[in-house]
Image (cartoon, rainbow, N blue to C red; front, side, top):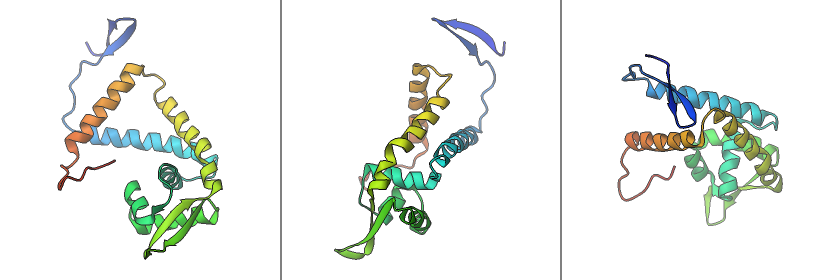
Length: 168
């Protein structure tokens, strides 16, 4: 009986009694990611911040004073791609870039007070989108979703070699 309701404690659940497709998990995850990021982009736009700019700022809020190469690696983009975003943030006086005095090839990126001041309002955007995404889920369902996603990531992430852990 597809869509049959089943009483579980205080909650009524729809029992999904259909075949689970053998493929399509990646597409579903990608669609969820795109929808979530679109909603976050809309919220960030209210502060005239792009999604890419937010990603850079977020990593700097966690670890200010990163080398541009490391910042790019943490975000998962090429250093060259990061340059345009950093140019935009620099133009708005949200970050500062300086050459590392010990290694002139390295560019160190630090937040300005204006960049640091955006942490609370922009993180509030992320919290609001997360709240929207979780709206019809119970706390137990959200916890189960996190467990499931960690398992999926562990299942498909390549093994780490050389004793170095993948810190994503």
